[in-house]
Image 1: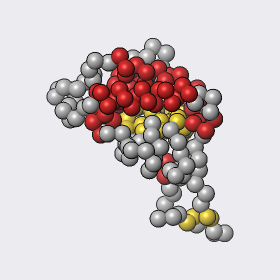
Image 2: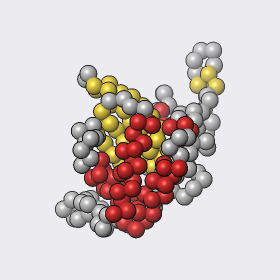
Image 3: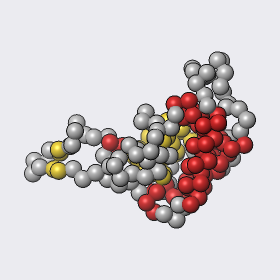
Length: 174
């Protein structure tokens, strides 16, 4: 069985950033999945579940209301490991080309007084939100994106090298 792209990334070397995870063709249109990594896996603490949930609501709302990008957004949601998010956009732009969009999105959290859609009618777990921690993580990641805008490493996945036998079988560390 082939390893999915996000599992072929060397999580001991990845740093926070914006990475192209995969490109798919749906009908005649390309869609790109981006790995938006806000913490360093297995080194920094994962984002608190309630803060992650709030960031999901806040950033999704921002992205789907951004005049330039709203028609390009297919999906925004958290990674199960709580170190970042997946963003799926129509088209195929390089990660550096969406840097400004994500910087604006994460900066926008600072001005929020409430989490959109955090009601029993709109959310499946409306009590599990933490706006203050969401603001902390958003500000931290926005500052990181600003400070590293010219750092190519925040846009390029570190890949794991896998041993491949002559007959094409791959070996993976467990």
